[in-house]
Length: 121
Image (tube, rainbow, N blue to C red; front, side):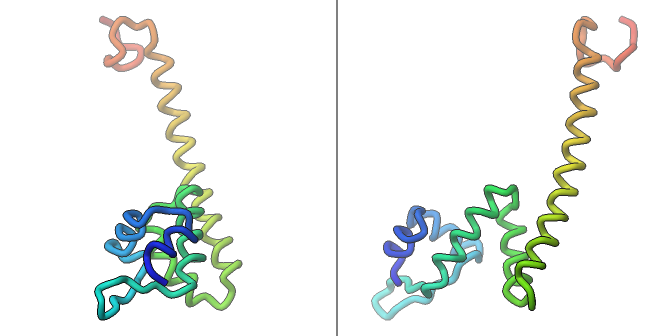
């Protein structure tokens, strides 16, 4: 299918698909007339890419894991493992943000929020 049809079916712009092609997330072949031709399964893949982005996966992670998932004997199990890993990353980031919030709160009203908490001056 041509890029316009793929864009319509995937619910994204041609420019987005061109960008995804440039970074290696989707591959189309060039026809003799120069048009891009994408396989029908590209629609489902692009839906997956968008969903994965919404769930906090970077394009680099999506590209890296896409090959793993394609070759996995049980894609659902492999996806669950990826989600578990992402949950651990999110939990660690939440802990970092909670510590940052505590530090910022301790600095409120100190006169200079750039001084270390408890420092005179």
